[in-house]
Length: 404
Image 1: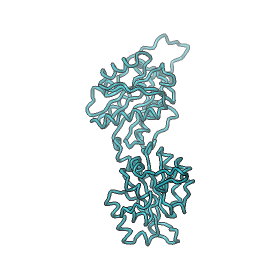
Image 2: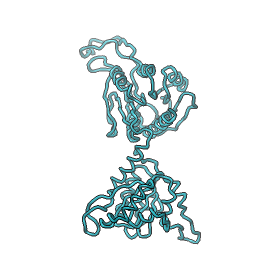
Image 3: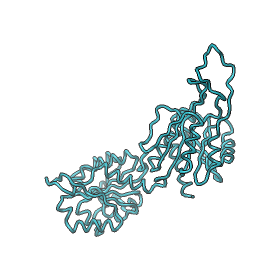
Image 4: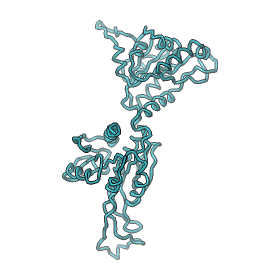
């Protein structure tokens, strides 16, 4: 999930040859999960067609104050557009459009929408090098920056005139990166240190056999990836899993046993802002581990077990500033057991799921949870993909951060 997921983006396109790049800008935004509304000037249609842009955005392209395609004319409400957007991007921003923006010359829908926008406005100039460096144009750009608009500077390169120099609109990928950086830095998770555990632990019987469980680690990995996409510094402490992929910004610490997971959690705990314990840690381990592989012919009447350290309870006792969230997979009386676990282990919240719910629990790509928090009513969710469940859990973590 990109930080742009579910964001409303207004893309304003003015009359410049660089407009040919705008379908790729739209496609990248849509791929990131954003909703994109294109507003273009009449001159922009010379360089890119509304049909192309409406196809890639899945929305009607707007270019005039009134839609007069039939007898019942419809006003394209620039005020509503300005309120709808989480960000406005004007790319390309021609010299003419930059002048109108700086002078509040609202003679077209794009400028009227710009003046109505309550959101951050990004602009990416595009023009020939002499136009770009002209004092009047430089003055317009400086005025827009002074007014709080965010400049995505033009780059140097080959221009439509055949000349080489500064004035080329920044490439679509870098424009999207500028938007992502802005929203990441505004995210409540930006630079938060979050520790997440995932997967099972394996407790050895002998060098080849172990006691374990069916945890796939999918839930923990989904949480880690989602948190990283939201700008957090994520450490994922993972038991043995296979096939799970991680976001490039997730630091993975691989462990095998409950004791190793405990040590890794303790090492990371003091510096953490939040810890989400989604791992299925073994409750018991063999009292002794055979040094050699046990032979079937020798028989094995009993395996003596001893409890592992309760990592969640251990962290709860040491809790200071950290937000501590646990998971409870239950087969009966799920809410009562989870409530008791949350209080007994000094947790801020607990994520509850039940083995009795079809599609939830170990091994599935889906999960069905209830988010239980101290002094708040339980929040029940329907069956969803574990990626969507991760978003729900992190939404609650955001609210806890906000309340601190």
